[in-house]
Length: 157
Image 1 (cartoon, one colour):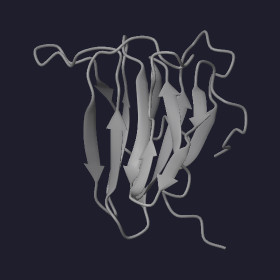
Image 2: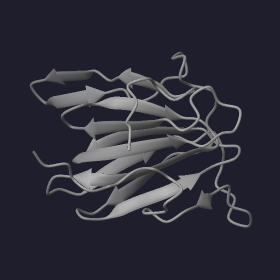
Image 3: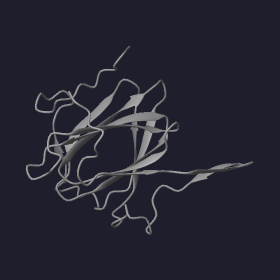
């Protein structure tokens, strides 16, 4: 398993800025004047309990925009696109309260995530498409499918 430092083709990452004051803080997650923004379909939050792996899936139409707003999450991407210059590459992001970032995920790139640490991870997503209940734009594999060269185990040492 080789995790690439090179971003998968089409993936974008933006460091997010916490703006603290005496009352707490504010953090912008996605703005329409940022280059990462394409269009708005909807927004939702997904929770991942410690010890759970939510993987793998991809979309044919939809771009995802992930921000971890509580806890820490390991988000992993795998490029299986035939025509991609980064075919076969894996990107791994440790995101959340210790590393507030926005990760933009292109269509046809497998992705998934798990919680890091003892707290539930909450990821807010701003997909470019509305969820279609009758025909979901989701194509899934098991978290341990051998066609994806990645192990979700914690690397000790």
